[in-house]
Amino acid sequence: MDSTVLQPNPWMIAPFGVLLAAIALGPLFFSGWWSKHYAKAAFGLGAVTLTYYVFGLQAYGRVLGAAHEYASFIALIGSLFVVSGGIHIQVKGEATPMANVVFLLIGAIGANALGTTGASMLLIRPWIRMNRYRITAHHVVFFIFIISNVGGCLTPIGDPPLFLGYLSGIPFWWVAEHCLPMWGVGVGGLLAMFYVVDRRNFARAPREVRERETAQDQWRFDGLANLFFLAVILGSVFIHHPEFLREGLMVAAAVGSHFTTRKQVHEANQFSFHPIREVAILFVGIFATMMPALDWLGTNAGVLLGKNPPSGLFYWGSGSLSSLLDNAPTYLSFLSAVFGSFVDADVVRQVHHLVQNGGADLAALSGPHVDQIRNTFLALQHYHGDHLLSKAVSLEEIEVCFLLGNATFNKYILAVSIGAVFFGANTYIGNGPNFMVKSIAEHYKVHIPGFLGYLFRFTLPFMVPVLLLVWWLWFRS
Image 1 (cartoon, rainbow, N blue to C red):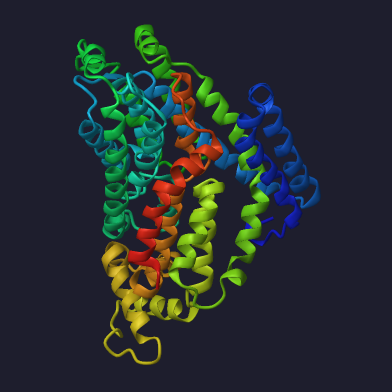
Image 2 (cartoon, helix red, strand yellow):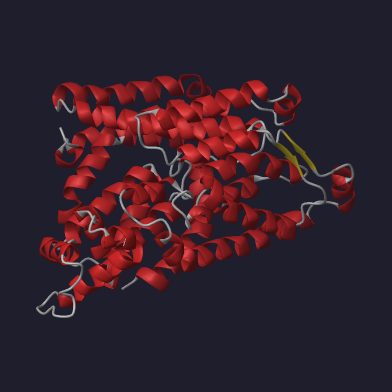
């Protein structure tokens, strides 16, 4: 059964809500029990949803699809976790507020080449080490805000939702062309707020403590051979056939890295498999239990949104759900809603006819949709010129260019993209790297906020103003 036509009972969203509540409240109110039994909660609630889908809906294809998505997800973040754990970076000098700002900015730029997962796993350990004598919650949370999320909105490699958009036909460089202003406001605003907070923290650390803790620091890079395995992982992202070759290469790179990295490097990084094990277990439950929520959204989004909705509705809608659901499937659901709500089948047919005629009738166009037809054709020339010359343009490419070529619809895709990436920073479960950074920080004994502390102490006072500013500047009409 196709997941796009599934109509799950809304009550089946309850296991997902229970799991989210358990992740949020368990460590806060019954941390001892939760640390021992979180796997039982994740597997048990996931089993309830899987039983309903297999025996109730008989949606075997949907379950297998979710399993494949989970396998791809855990292969990517797991392999990046292992390989980055074999690279030891030590910086020289005092972690002043300005030095921290520069570090975060470099990480935000690098996230677009390494992905937010790769950049987070590579940089979180040196980030903790360089701030070790005054490391506190705001260092970890702003790292998640900037490097694990907002910084990666300039390329499809940067964040999983944008990569799914690329696979769905959004041109690779369209993201950089259109998201750069939002990236500048988002990263710049967060860096400015971080500097103010970090300046106060820095002033409280006595000078003699700072000098003593940083006196022996030297630049040091160990395990650089793992850059080869990192390149294998990033290159395999673009492999689609045969099935599971991509995931197989990622796992092979992780295995190769783990057994070729010197023990001293792993010890210097305090490397262990606990963080990735916790993420793997919890996300089994999340991927399983969120199926009814995503399927219900996919089949009802058009009705809920109505006719001619403002782009801000897509920004806040995809963003709000990306704070609670994994932002990659949420992005896909809203992208499908954009296609279903706005693509004009008649315009697509006329553009396809133009393509077959080599664009000869373009100047003679007339009628109510002439501007949309012309703009769609021009977008095809810009993004798929080679296919256009060979008359090998697919209907899917025409549909994408209909949205990209007409400014009214272009903004909806932009709203969904920015909403999914930026709002993924709002909670630990909004984006895959968030939870892994949290686990690594806890392993280093860093005091970090729980689920609700993260939300109320950092998301509301720091992240939400940035989200409101982005909405006000680009999506309020």
